[in-house]
Each structure stands twice: as structure tokens, then as C-alpha cells.
Length: 163
Image (tube, rainbow, N blue to C red):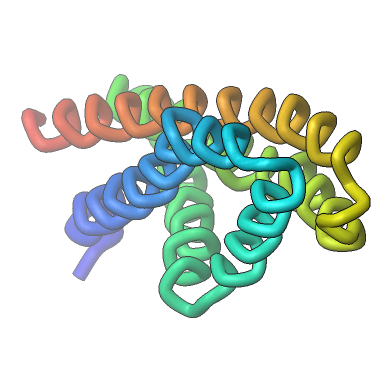
């Protein structure tokens, strides 16, 4: 078994993982945060605090932490094969995913979640308004980056398979 023989499986797994996580982020951008914003501040904040607690579970963590690990493996492979067009696409998709859905989540959205967790819903009207604006901005960015990462990974896989 060679790296070239398992690479397509790594790429497909990364695409599936990226699709799952990016799809979740898209749901927040498209309707979840809008629905929470229509609730009273107290209820919207409480619901988001509950989501932030419940999302930390083994299945979510498998996709959230496993996908960047797959992407790191694809990056390493791609760096040794930069002369191939498909490797450049795979590199762009993998790095994009690591920067977008993974790093932005860790560096921007999670700290906002942690700050929100410390606020009592009955006393946090202003914090909830600020949270929504900032959290959604970063969520939209990581969602778009995730989408383009998936496109690049798919194109890279397609080109690799046609060789």
C-alpha cells in the first residue's frame, strides 16, 4: 500500500468532514442565528449557551478535529508534489479548511462563546447584541472559506483521478 493508493480515500474523508462542518456553519449563517435573534435577548442567549455546551460531543469532535488532521496529511503530500496541478488544488483546499472552519473557530468563535458563557442570560442584553454581530461575521467568513476549500478539494480529487 502506497501513499498514492490511499490518498483518494484521505481526500474523500476530508471532503466529507469539511462538508459536515461547513454545512453546520452554513446552517448557523442561514437560519439558526436569525431564529435566535428573533427571540428575546434572555431566551436567545440561553439557547446559544445551550448549543455551545451540547455541541462538544464525540461525534462533532470527530469531524471538527479529524478533518484538519486529514488536511494536514494532504498538505504534506501536496508539498512533495507541487509540480502536479491536482496537488496545488489539494494544497489550497486543505490550507483553506485549516485556516477557515478550523482556525477561525478556535481563534475567533470559541473565545466569543466562552465570553458569552460567563454572562447570565437575564443580565446580558448588550452582550448578546454584540455577540451576534461579531460571532456571525466570523461565522460567515469561515463558512465561505469552508465552501471554497471543499470546491478545491473536489477539483483536486477529480484531477488526481483523471491522471
